[in-house]
Amino acid sequence: MEEKYLPIGTVVLLKGATKRIMICGFCCHGTGENDKMFDYVGCLSPEGFISSDKNLLFNHDQIDKIINMGFIDEEEKEFKEKLSSVLKMIDENQEDAIWVM
Image (cartoon, rainbow, N blue to C red; front, side):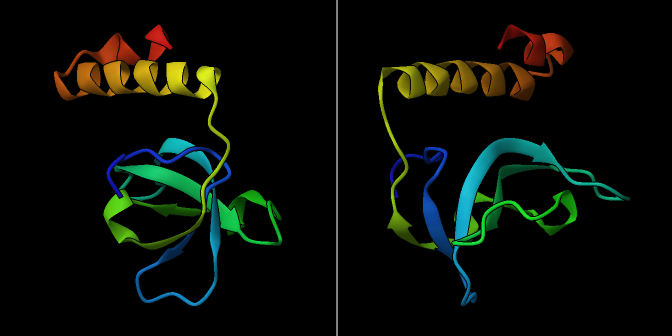
């Protein structure tokens, strides 16, 4: 897995899991005491979105296997470039970075 941020719609299997997950978003914050940012938000596959409390937050290094890659086109590539630059700004502690997207 060379690219850190896989396309929306990519179906993966997480380490130690038996149920597939479809990536449906990026850079989501958890809730509660530890509201750190996770690389991905996903929903069960093939069920899809059921409710917001059924979504899973996970990081790229938790992916064991890519089952099916999501759709990639020019718009998706441009989005990934913007995402990378925003994340770089966040890493450099620029609080208004999220508004660049």
